[in-house]
Structure formats: structure tokens, C-alpha cells
Length: 273
Image 1 (spheres, rainbow, N blue to C red):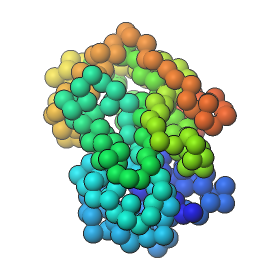
Image 2 (image 1 turned 90 degrees about the vertical axis):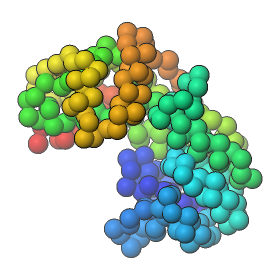
Image 3 (image 1 turned 180 degrees about the vertical axis):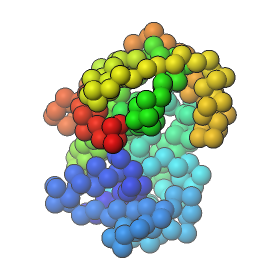
Image 4 (image 1 turned 120 degrees about the vertical axis):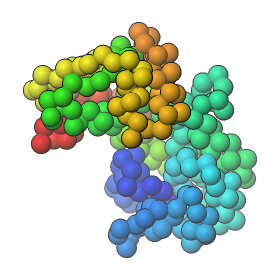
């Protein structure tokens, strides 16, 4: 009953691998560029790596890489895989998920997996707490954090909770075969998050309110223009509007969803060292 976990170096996948091992369940970590002999090669953009990675596997935790998702699902079915748990995104819940790059890659992956004979479950988390890592350098250097929409709300879901839900779904077949929207326990603005980081780190963190174009210019070397526009549009839609929250994490794991403050405490060193 081995589980293949793709994207093994990612925050969700690495937490899931730890949980599965704690439960005594066989797990096969996979990565597109494994640096450890215990990690198998599975490049989701290269179908030639699929067959070997899936040999003898009964379930899969799959990152949403749409380019060859159809081939992956077909290879999984041929290998006898019984369940694929796909890490999707709540972005697919927008009225037209095909219209923007944030949702398109995830909805394409969902469709590819759903069309295969393998039972599938889509996990649709909101905004990861870990996205706040983008602020680590400004906080450490004392530079203001540039925000175009400081009062935009997010649902701040902890990556460890996403992993815990994935582990629960993989362990209980009755939970599979449906999508789950995952959120944190609070709707927080970016300003709220920065206030929490300030308390946790003991540092004064200033915010610079910038225009959309100024933010795009600052992020140009890190984020492609269409993706930047999609993010800005999303934040604008959330400006002053509390996020809708779900209780899925607690229902499936038995513990309340972790707070952003708990994430900040765990990652304090990244903002002060």
C-alpha cells in the first residue's frame, strides 16, 4: 500500500511524508531533481519518468502540473493506482477558472485526473501561510513591505494542515472521490499578518502602500506579468472583504486549523536571522 508523494521538497509534501512515516505507512518520496537516493525521480513535465515512479504504488499525492496530467493519470491507472489526491487550489472556484493563470493550471489538472478511471480527490487550499516568506527579507533588512492592497483579506491556511487532510483522505477511502476547500481559522488582512509578524519577531515592520504598477515593477524579476495581474485582481476583489472560511481541516483531522500566528512562531528565525 505504498503512497507516491510528488514534489517531495515542497512544504505540504514534506509534511505529508513525515505524517505517513509516523503512521507506519510505506511512502515513496519523489522529485523532479532528487538529491537523495531515497527519493525517486518523477518530473511531472516529463512522462518518461512516470512508469518507474509509479511501479507498485497504490496511491499518489500529486502536485497540479497540468502539462502532462493526462499521461500521468493514464500511467497511474495502468500501474494499478487506486487513489490520486491532487493538490489543487481554491482559485478553481472562481466563476471562470479558465480565464486566468492562477486557476487555469489547477482546473486543467483536476479535469485530467477526474477523467481517468482512478478515483481522485482534489484538495483546494486557499492562501498558504508560507506565502508570507516573501516578506522575510524586507523584515530582516528593515525595508518597508510594499503592498498594493494592504486591507485585502486572505484565509491563511497552514501547510501542515493541508498535509494532515491529505493523510486523512489517503488513510480512509470513504473520504475520497470529492473536492475539499481548505482554509485557516481566521480571515486576516495583509496588515493583520504583518502585525502578527511584528509581535512575533519583536520588530517594527512598516508598510509602503504602492500602486499596482509600482508593485508589478518591483516583482517583475520574480513574477510574470499575467500572473502578477491575476494576483492583483484577486487581492482587489478581497480588499475589505473577509474571506469565506471552512471547517474541513477540523472535520477531517480532528484538530482545529492552525493559526497564522502559530506559523509565524514556527518560522520566526526566517524573519530575524
